[in-house]
Image (tube, rainbow, N blue to C red):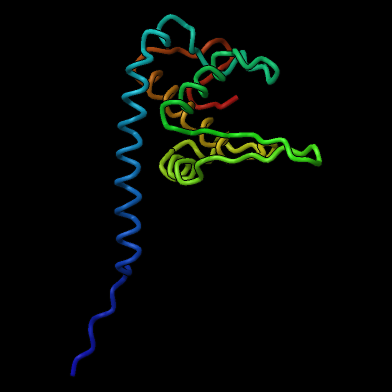
Length: 151
């Protein structure tokens, strides 16, 4: 009896790659849809980018865009104060990890100071939407800023 030929790639690896690409395609379609919806706000300069990010100013354009991305993609974080004074953060981990798995920007947006991956997912989604807007000419970098630079 002949042995089955060895496959160079396992079926599970192929299935995983196929699923990953399907998730990426669906995610990028949502990025495009959100960017198109926000086009007037990009063109007006309301959602311009990174140069004015102030950690204490949660009204800066980048933080506004992150908030819009959290709402669009369903990235919700709840904070519960514990008896010992600490804060317990919780989110829909499935959504958070789906966004992180699909986002081409997730490697660039990690900040070790964040206490929940949901913040990372919102930042990655915001960068993806901003890059789409810039690629289409709706948002232009300000002085000292590049399309490819996060900060």
